[in-house]
Image (cartoon, rainbow, N blue to C red; front, side, top):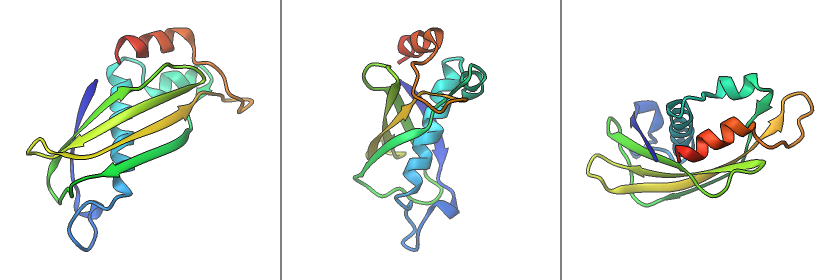
Length: 132
């Protein structure tokens, strides 16, 4: 599991002064990107291997509002087995350690040239599983 801190920006909030639900998906992406970077294999390295990782599904469930200038903690982990797909699970907590929302994203591994599904390079798959 990896933790990433995100400060809520004014532009992330709606008229009610709370984070607009669509921004949680951006927070998930930040958590996922930082998780992969912390594993030592940033997206640029995966893409250099000729593999792209498009998001193919997103799920988000909100429980509490998050507000402007709060520092949120995004906890990211790999959920399940890595095949031609990888699923990440997220929990976002507020400064009071209350669960704000949960979610998941599923990404496919595709060949950059053919755009067809592929298994991830073995070294990357093993490395991600060791750090999940």
